[in-house]
Length: 591
Image (tube, rainbow, N blue to C red; front, top):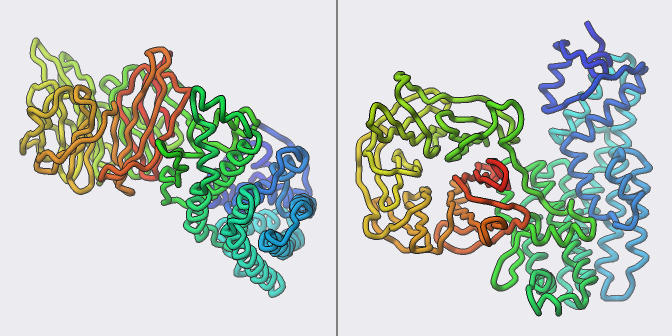
């Protein structure tokens, strides 16, 4: 049997013992082929560093402490980025950054802020006592290579699960005292932030310490910090100075020229606010599996509400400062891997509760995982080789059943069929529908809704026609989505609005136009996406509303040159996936 060192560094992955650890720790990949001769202690330290860096606790700790990094301190930034959080050198960098901040603070009005920073520094020192206990235990508690390996994996798993129950009395006391210091720091930072006599930079600094203290106060259960941190963001993003800074920065024309005055201070305000937003986003993404990352506290600039972590207009400004990492950048997939896995002529996209994305492409359903990796093809059954099938749209219901609207042509006849697949992608049922020019479909409450340019037809899942509605109201319908309470929303290009119907087809009102629409069942929010500008420079704009039509926020993506869209879905965790064609190819843009 290969040793753990051989397995990890020679690339021999056939050992079952390694796979037991691999499965317990999750995604852990060693790329390439390496050959090292390591003794027990060296191996343990190397393995610990690798595993700790991927653990939830250390990821949360490093993201949080990142708020201390001064852009001008390149060496400090690199150490915080790449260093071992348990190492005393890492601790030294943190303390130096804190001391530098404290040295610049004076005046009675800043006493709460200074006190918050002092409490925070004490908490960091106590927390490092806990880290040191973990390091000593892991480095000296094993005598053989195999025992060292087991100990390292045990520590990593314990940290990932936040299980500190086996700490000794000294470490438990240090952890308890650290929590108290962070609690005191959080309270003082809250008081400082609430002090309107403080300047805006000091209030933002107070919020940075409030956020860090809030997270580290619950370092062994960081998920408990998510909701308090969202409250922090709501208060920070609502500061009038913050709103004015974003508003002035995004002004156009003569207003943009005026906004250049004071741009250095405004740029610092915007970048610091974005930094706090990004840290909380990263921590939330790390520990909050069921948290809706897309329903983010916005910055209200009067005529619009801006998402500070995703809006391309903000990202463009941050790039000029070398701070683009403060923003979340959209990514795409659909043209990777083997040729047969690439998108050719796609129409329709849907998602299930596991985050998988299903795209209709010609006469095949292509399934991708949440990271855009191809999983498999699902063929549309066709027993007659003379019949041509083409997918028009795809939808899923609350039970992850997949519904596919398919156009067929055979011997001069043509029409539409709806295919129903189970949540395991097995064909469950199919039924013909009227030969009208159906283009889109949605599914909800055991109903399948088909959309043509002028009406909506409702079928039950056994293919029985129930009703139709929209005649006389819809002129050039483009997209459809269904809401949890049964309401139906239809995009109409002719009247430039979104029409809202009851489950029974009663007309309830209308909102403005957008080409694509989707509903997020968990949060009950509606997402609309559209393009603006000339054909060769169309820019994507995404807006979010409550199901009752209340505007939540918008996000603009300046770099997306879109020709047209062919569908949109929102995954359970709130990722927006838009099927589109840019100037070169088809792809799925994930926001």
